[in-house]
Length: 303
Image: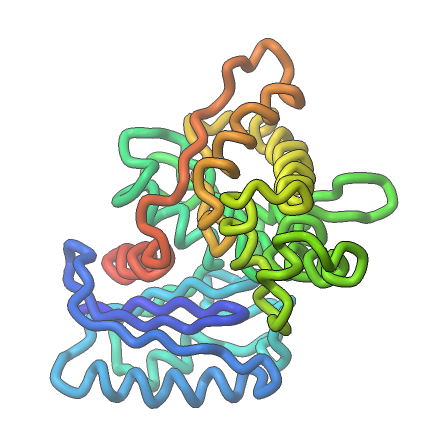
C-alpha cells in the first residue's frame, strides 16, 4: 500500500491507497495555522500511526502547499504556515513510515498530475492546473509527468503580477482575498444578499458566494466579475507561454462551478492573441478534494 499526503494552509489529508490509486482509507484534518508546522507534524504523526498500523507502506507521496526541492524532499518555504522553511520533510517521513520511497512536491504540481491521469485532464496534453484555495497555485503536467523547471520548479501562477505595482494573482483571486472583499462588502453594503448570508462569518466568507449568486445578488456578481477578469488575465500568460490543451480549475473557489468556468472561458479570449484562438479548454477539476491525494499516490508509485 502507498500513503498519499496533502499539506495545505487550511487542511491536512492523508490517504491509504493501492497501485491503481484507489483510496482505501482517509484522514482529513483541519490545520490550525497558529500552531505552525510543528502542530501539523504532530497531527501527521498521529494519523500516520493509525493508517499504517495494519499495512506495510511501500511508498509515500506528498503534495505540499508551497515551494519545495522536489529532488530532495526539503521544504523551501511556506507562504502561509510558519516553521516549514528548510525542513527535510522527505527524511522525516522516511523515519516515520519506514517507506522505501518518499517523494515530496508542490501541491498544485501533484494535483495537476492527479487530474491529468485520473481526472478532467485525461486525454489532454499538456494539462495546466490552477488551484483557487487559501492561496493560488499552479502545476503543469506534460506527457503524464510533472513538468519541473529549475529548482524549486513550481508553476507559481499565484505570484504572477497583474500590474507594475506588484499586485499578484493570489492577492486578488485566492479564497482569502475573496473573504476579505466580502468583509469589506458587509461594511459598505450591509443590505446586500451576500452581506446578509455572511453576516455572522469571521473567515471563510467566500463559501456564501455561490448562494448569493443564485439569489441574483448584484454585489456577488460584481465580485465574481472581478475574480474572472483578474484570473483570465493571469491565465493568459500561461496560454502564451505553455499552450496547454486544457486548464483545470480546482480548489475551494471552484465550488462556484459553471459561473466561474464559463466566465473564464469567455473572458480568456479577450486577453489571448488571435493566433492562439480558440485557446485551451477550461474545465472544473473532476477529482475535487481528491486531486492532491490521488496525485500524491501517483508520486508514491513512481520508481
